[in-house]
Image (cartoon, rainbow, N blue to C red; front, side, top):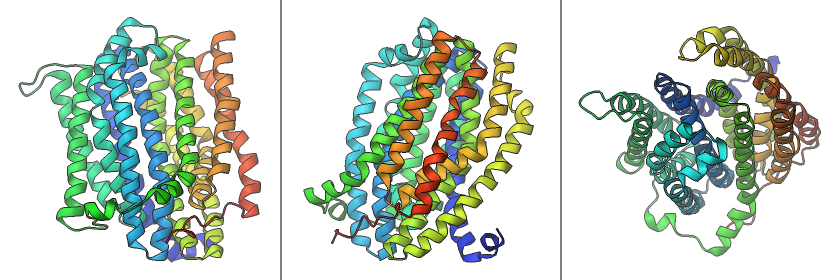
Length: 453
């Protein structure tokens, strides 16, 4: 324990990467919170509609995180080797793959929004509101690809502050634009739920513009020309997909699993959907501390492996496996003690309040274990190139345990939503039995750039 806190180089490296990532993710999560707080004034149906529409966006984002995660795996190891040429190449591959993925998701959301909403709920009002939201916000998916691509490259080379500043701009602009379009202020039309989608889309434009300005206008971090971005051949694309495919599949299956939970909660009624939307929004805001540490871990370990310092990678993994649950204890305590104050921000009925109160308490208790699992799968195993094993753990936990439990509990036993959530959390306990032996075995270390010239 003392060794962790006395090693100033380790702590500085972790803080330099993790703090901006955490802050950026906090701001990104705050965008959803701003939407929910403002939409919350319109009632349970509006909260549920935005929440369920954002389940589709979550599947899109997790797919994009998989696409970018594959590129980060290479770019972080190339940075450890001092190879800027290949960093630019893999950024180009990342943007190209991301473009086709984001275009597909955008077209589906724009053309079939009613079908998407119908997957999650049968409530006509919720479907109508969610449809109006999806049609507008779908445009932002293409912009998100560009922002995520450059942000991933910047993080991989240690320039994590630029994406953070972009998110600050997004948060401020999203709050202001939502205030304008949701409620019809400053002479704008009152658009309600669709106004939240418009505000979010315009804020994404500003985020992307800032990142591109800093890269190409201010020459910060990596400044690739169009030629350098697309200076790759089919063999390099195959190399990318060999490593990235398990990541993409993992994130798609994980996010669809989370969306499946929403379908199960929807079987219990609109109040239950609103309960889990509120609780999940709060939970996601606090989870970003674990995710931020995990993303920083993946980059740090990737840099070590790229520099042929496997002992350093192992040392980092051990320190982080102790540090992360400690952070989880602190965050869990904050959520546990702050639950009443958090819920007072929402205009919800008594049933939704009481259910959300219990769910948030459970989320707080499970936080240290959840943080450990996040940092093992996203940070250590992915950063070390052990993506297939990480994927298997995730898929078995979600689809082998949590999703079946969610539907059995909702459809057959008709459990209260808070009881159902407790059983769903069993997936977190399952994961640890597969992570600890793998961590000790050191089989997670894999140099993925060895064959790339």
